[in-house]
Image 1 (cartoon, rainbow over the protein chains, first blue to last red):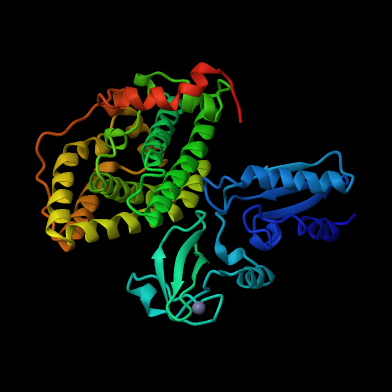
Image 2: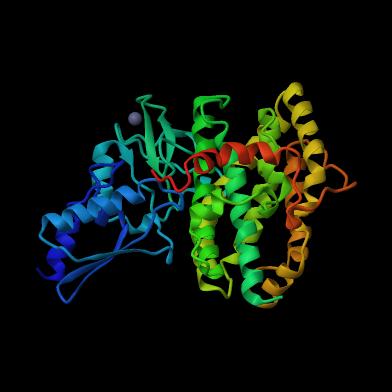
Length: 160
Length: 252
Ligand SMILES: [Zn+2]
């Protein structure tokens, strides 16, 4: 196996809380190298207290073992701090289709400049007429929004 | 004072602030005034526990006696905890919790904004991660201060009283001792006397917008840096440490 194949293998490991998003697409896997044929994986937490980190590590171990690796290292680093900018284009699409609004990228939204919540597109009907209900949603990385047009509540993957 | 000991003390204080306030906030789980708020406050608690964990892990490494984050969190006695007194105050009603949180968040935000530039790489890395989360905490507790202060007559009066009640614990946040001096000299942490006027201005600004009166500085409680706690602390410990005391070394 070469490093490209190792990355592809890791791309099969899904986020435990958002099962359509791989850890690679989420930007949690920072490095994947082979040292004398043994994988050395570096991961970083999305949030300091992310309770899913342990599960992520175990899921990576399971995939590595499944591919026949007995020896590997998984290292957790805090720096540089994870940012939503690391979510890949494929990941953003997967989030959208799953019903979670992906983090808005660099924005011309004047709300933000004025300290108001961001304008977020409804993942269900694509309306821009949405409002924030709470800065904290079902997990630390999400905020809770509601669409003014279709009235559906939805999670927004907030920018950090 | 030896540099290593000073850094250990410093990390312990930062870690204890986060762990004890995080534990306090977690007591709201299932009791928040509305569902969204229940979730928000528990998320804040979780962030703080995350900060505590990173800081304790590093404190254990600096100390070099083989203690891990769980040993430090669960196996100390009361006088060995060094959290600021404001962190251990009971939750009270929601206005009390918000007043405590806003004053602490404002302090924590200024502190961690400086720690990002620490000469200690690990401290800087923990801070760079934490500051992103603390920014959200501060935004939320600021919004609630505005909502309650500039809300109904009832909410205004009650949260005003909350700010008066908690005020005498704010001085303790800025007290410095030998460990702080060593840490400041080494460029690891900021001089809190420089942060104090900034903190005061920010608090004043928000309270004004919330139509609340800024409490006057009277007699201030102190003692957290020597491990002297309020009468509330023993109860926290008995709950926090129950499992580890009953089943030493237990793991999930
Ligand atoms: Zn919609």
